[in-house]
Image (cartoon, rainbow, N blue to C red; front, side, top):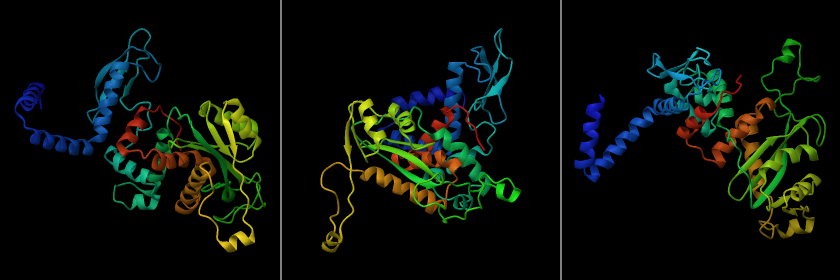
Length: 345
């Protein structure tokens, strides 16, 4: 449709269309946009690049339009005295660059946010193999993480959970170059040492009453590491609920927050015989963070059959986008297109 005809139709709709016709037209346009959501998001990014005019190669501002590619997407070229002379597409600098099958991106994003297994994704009939589904998962999930991370305030529950260190998918034992000097561990066999040890990876979680989450994989469970990871994300004057770990007491001091220690006393035999209450008295506790850790255990160990320690941050993003943010697939694609290129497997 040319510009003149489009302008005539737009004016006619503004003047003569009834409310019922406008509602019907909106429904048809929404259906069209759902089918062409990738092209629509690409057009939004093309407009953004045309206005920003920053070269992704040399950061020069001497960027001009430079024709279109085979799919009709806008291309740009960096020219001028300070330009590098290189051309680039609208998806340059994003994880979608050189990623094939754009018609599958939205159906795949829908299934990715559902958290279903790779086998079910490959059997869903969207046109990709199981290996491609795995590659796309670890290509898209890092770009879906919120940036910047939300700041938690009010009543903040903080605690850590542990997962056995995993090298799932690593071929080192078969090639003679194991990642650790130990026999390979089969899924579900657990750590060799009892209690907490270097065989387990700690994940620190903080959650407030507004459904804001902060999850991070700790290098080590000490005061300096916990303070470095949590201080930027706790608002001053909050109420921190945690166990008696000294790092949380110092966190409350440095953020001018109140600290409430949740102490758990195991029930006695007489209390078990009389019947345990359904909850703890009072409004403060660690119920929300414990529920979040239970979701982690269910998703990582039961649904995904174990998660490699290397990819734990990716699966934490999957958990947050599904249960905390409830991210829409179209919004997920838009966020990914706005995220700079990250490393991918």
